[in-house]
Image (cartoon, rainbow, N blue to C red; front, side, top):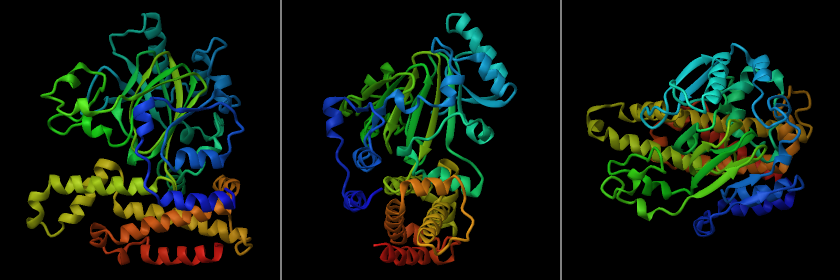
Length: 425
C-alpha cells in the first residue's frame, strides 16, 4: 500500500458503506480478467466497500494443484489425489440430510470417499448413500509441505488465519471436493468474515444476497431459510416477508476462477460438475468493524434468549459470553486477544522497518506478507484496530468484563497504538 492509498482509504474506511443498490438493480459483479489489477484498486474497489467480484483463471494458472489434481479433460484426477492423501481422515457431509440448518458430517478415510465418488459417477451421479460432499477439510494445515496453491495478494491481509497460526490452534483454510449435485445450504460465513473460493476444476453456481436481505428470508419463527430455492418460501404464512427480498445475484464460477464473497453476504452454492475448490475465510482492517457488529448482535440474541434468568443469576453476563462462544466460536475476551495479536505483529514489524528490532526473530511467512503490503498497510491496520478498541471500550457489555483485568489489556494496547500512529504519521 502506498501513501496515497493509505490516506484515501483512511477516510473511506470510516464512511458508511453503500446500500448495494446497484446489485439489486443490475444483478452483475465485476470480472477481473488480468493480473495487472493493482492491490490498491482491489482494496478500494472491493474490500473497503464490501462488494463481490470474480477473478479470472489467470490468477490460479500456476498453482500446483491445478496441474496435479486435474486430468487433461478438466476432471478430478482420482489417481493423483489418492497418491497425495490415501487413508487421510476427511470430513464428509451428506447433502441429502438436513440437521438443524446444515448437513451432518462423518469422518471417512479419503480413499473411501474417492471410491464412493467413482461409483457415484458410474451410477449416473446417484447413490443409495446419498450425495456426499467432502467439505471444510484443513488440508493445508495437515499437508503444509504440499504447496498446493498460493494465496493471491488481494487476500493476503488475513488477520483471521494470522491469529490462529500464531496461537497454533486452528485455521480457516479449507478444501472442498464433491460430485455434481453436491451443495451448501444458505448461510453467511463464520463471524461474517470475507471468503474467497477458487475452483481447481469443475463449475459452481452461486446465489448471493447483499447484507440485510436475509431478514426477508426468515420463516415465521425467525429461522433463516435452509434452501432459498425451495417452493415453500412462496408460502406467505411460512415466509411472510419473502416477497420483500431483492432478486439474488447468480454467478456461474468456471474452472480456475476465484470468487470474492464479502462480509455478511448470505449465499447458497451448487456444484454443477464434479468439482474441487479451495476456500479461505478471512478478515482484516476493512471489515473488522462488521465482525464486531456481528458479535454484538450475536450477544444481544443470546441475552434475549435467556433474559428471563437475568435477575436470578449473579454471573448472567458471563453465561451469555459462554453461550455466544459455543454458538459462534468466539467471545468478547478472545476477540480482544485476537486484536492484541494483530497489533503486536504490526508494532513489531514497524519497529523492524525503523531498525529498532533488527535482532528480533521474525516469523515467516507472516513477515514476508507484511513486507509485501508495506508499512503504510501496517499503519492502516493499527488505525482500524484502534477504532475497534474504542468501540469495544465504550460497549456496556464489554465494560462488564472488566477490561482492565483482561490479559489483552485493551486500554494499554490502545495507548500504544496511538503512540505508534503519531510516530508513523
